[in-house]
Amino acid sequence: MAILMSVAEILSGLKSSLKGTVKFIFQPSEEGPPPGEDGGAPLMIKEGVLENPKVDVVFGLHINSATEAGKIKHRSEGAMAASDWFTIKVHGKGSHGSQPWVTGMQRNIYERMYRTVNRIAGSAGATAGLSIDNKTLITYNDPAPVKKMLPSLQATAGEDNVLWMDAVTGSEDLSFFGAKVPSFFFFPAGMTRRSEGNDRDSRVYEFTSLRRE
Image (cartoon, rainbow, N blue to C red; front, top):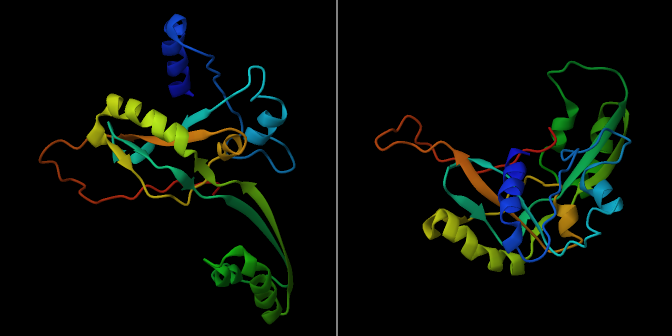
């Protein structure tokens, strides 16, 4: 919110020199609306956020606290994963929390989850039902705006500080905007720079965006 407000303030001061129209999207419920309610990007699209004036391209960012400040990470095409919510309802006798039967499902793709849930529940004399709700699309960075914006990112941060990133398994609600118009989602860094000779924490961290705990 603070970043978008700052960008709006700066661009407002440059309004006379801008070609075209800039629309700032302040989005509620980015992490997902309460169960049974609409919200986030899908609801905003439904209510016409991409129209009047029509939006030609969408830009978004997420601060990356695992990379030193001053750098920017990006990639073209698939950048972040889709996400699905699933609910398992077990009907049977209670058991101790130290023996959670759902651990038998860890890391299986959801096409196999239905079979796994039913067999594990059945082995304990119980029945179970599984529902899967497709929540977020793959965050896809259109190569055209990525290519066009790359020189601006390099001019801002320095060519050596604009880094290509691997795709991550976190998910992002902006993917719904990207399904309607070309989009580019990138990651400015926010970790405090380490001073020279300071090896208090020399471990290397890979960026992972955790969503919907």
